[in-house]
Image (cartoon, rainbow, N blue to C red; front, side, top):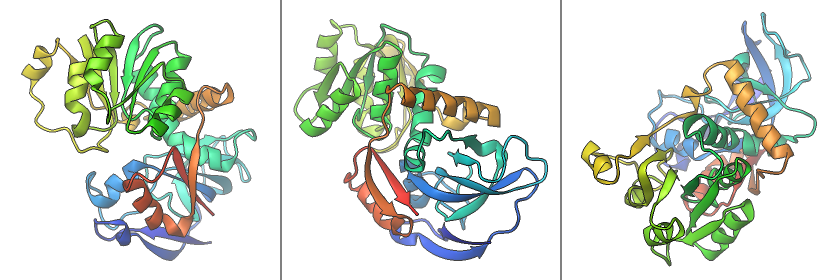
Length: 325
């Protein structure tokens, strides 16, 4: 079978993404072949392309896609030709019209979830799921801070946190984004370009600070996160959109109230196929109850992926972006 596949041979800007026609072999033992109908765009794809997260070259890009199974390799159980499925990693190569992938990275899709929605929400939703429930273990009544609360992961975190009963304070850069965070369920939204975030957080929490900070921005918000956390609070640093956090001194954590900090990654929590399917099922359950919404802001044809990367890096996207076939 012939497939159209994106590849990078060097790190750099969006221009390093090149497209190739390849012949896909039959799926190996333990693999399935998926014909893609929609592919998800995520900021981690930019990190891989630009070298923030080093990859071995040449490399495929993208980890999230939804489609139908076209062939099944030897020993695969639980999947059959024609099944509607999705993948969200960790293996890269989803920027393709079709690919072979290990069956333990495949999750089933119900007929209630269309392909665009699945590609928009699987990885970001799984990230929200593990951050809230497995990593931070947020409980009802806790006060939490979510930076970039209108972002692709941020607005899902807000919805998930509200579903588990937390009190959510979000930050956003504009009034429009603040409105989106409020619509997602945030109890308080701070426009960080107009207000002192730390002062507002302390005022909202009667001076105590928040029990958990979810920070997908990184260096640009690190000091704010430190100053907003309550005594013995937890900072969950899960992204680098505003630069990587470097040079953290343990004494700094002590001076801000004996804080805890973690830099988690999804696939240390979703290790096995069962883990991935369990987390995906939780995402689709939250989607079904309306707690989270994919909010597809833009769509690009698959081979305009470079343009999609440019828009993402320029802050010209809202919610999720889907690459269509």
